[in-house]
Image (cartoon, rainbow, N blue to C red; front, side, top):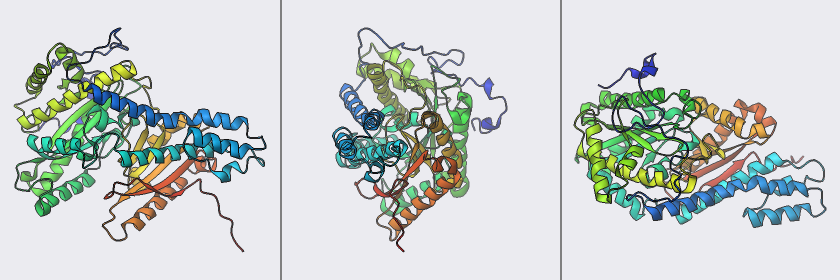
Length: 511
């Protein structure tokens, strides 16, 4: 068993856990990514890179983030003419033309009595922008990853061919990893189970419950394949690190210590597998995968497991190094060399299905490396946090962009307090320090097939909203934290439904 007690060790610094992907597979050498190392005068793509997909993803990123980034400039213009006689009509016309929605009339109407509540307007605009993005995501499928898309069907078939009937990925809830699935790994979002947690420390009991549901469905409905098929449940953790500022821009939940982030991720994986085996015998074993992501370049490193799931923390295959090693080869030669080096990197003989799967991840990530090179100058300018809102609850299938959302996956604020507190701390620096409020979107997905599920989802939203108001009462009382309550039927393709907001007008009591 590989390093089962490692995460409890006091001297984790003795493990390499370097701050950038290591050159090849040598334990002695590291390859340090330098700022702007990819800014070549004449840009050329790697032969594996999907150029058309990169252009499409760039357009989507620019369009979505543009909806949020134009909010502050517009509100500054609104504030300039708030004392004019036709203020309300001018403000509404400007918002409709440039943002695509109305501003709250009950806030604008008070401008002649008191200073305009810019905090409320800011939160309102963030919430409306989120709704527009959500609507377009479910109506138009801009990432081409919906359940009935050719991309999703193709990936699901590929996954089965590799020997896995389900892929369950836990990224860190850090907003810099919100695009892990659709961008960094290029996996159709509907073909993977994603749950984000601070430090990628997923809840083991809940994950075992989801494993049980998956296996039960295979027995009862043969979905995605029959229980007699020799496939496994693949559980992956993606921790993160910074190659350009390792001591400050690593994972906050692990104190920017890459060795701790990797070790704790591995420990969760091992504990999950042990929980399954102890509860359902060794025949119910699952496969594990540990992946690191550089938040500066999106380059991944994969700790290749042996066929008996042994994973070593100080040994991995680096996408950035494979990029350099294969950029002069043909596509076919590149893929073959990637596969060969993946096999040589494993601590023991790897499963061939796992080799095929990791080869695809590396190939997909090479496209993302070129994406960051071409559209972000080789490394993201927002090296730290730059999220637009906090997402709390269960859901947010529509969020797949870097630094758009900080996730706090929870059923109750009490159990999810560590994740939520990290998010609030981040936004105190991003927003509160600028006298802007923290926008929090509460979401609970439900199954419309279950009687009363919608009503319970609404009750969950209100319960969590009340707990947030209590926990962060000082922020709420000063207008520095606003909430939007949303629910969504996971069995439908429609977007989320708004069921309440801290910005709703206060109805006057009738005597």
